[in-house]
Length: 296
View (cartoon, rainbow, N blue to C red):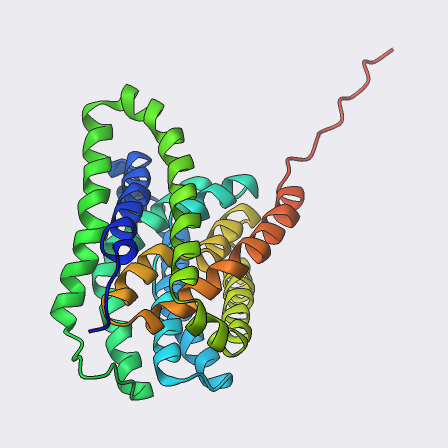
């Protein structure tokens, strides 16, 4: 395995824990029950997020002829769940936040299965090698469980036991999670600047294509399925704003090069998703109903 550092050993897991706890503070069991009470929107969203997005990751890696390790990294990113940033941008876009939160919750839990699954498929498909290291899928499952389910459960448990205090802490932790995201991405880029600089021109077009196509296709699929603009906005935002912090955390346990697509993707997603949020906030704005003049 490649040499590790304070950033990847300590700061990265701590930052991700803050992000996942902050997501947990927004969740209740009702968010998971929404899978049963409002199954159509959730099902369409999760099919987009858990199946279409990884397939687009494979397609973008193939189309742009990425190096095998970078191709695997892009697929790993495409298979990662949404998160608090997707929820926040959905809110700014006037999308259906409840659907966004439910998708983030369910996909974060399912990441224990989906991320190792698509990681293994990508390694086999692209014939990627990581030096002398053999990637242990049970080990990856354990890592994803430890850095997603555990802090997520802590946040949910705290909200259930102390809802008033959780309501106070939630906005503070959201700001902290945004700061943690920026620090983690900046740290990942800075710590491997030479590799990132060498690979940027190769990875950037593929990452941008994945981001734009994922949001466009998921929004179109949702509208064709007769979901509302607000629901379609939430689904598209989940596809555009992946939990790249989780991707980087998982990737760096295998190879720092594997984390490069996640870091590069993060540089684009705020611009594209932010632009999409601005457009949809105008489209989703409630229309005023003219008041009839009193009869004379």
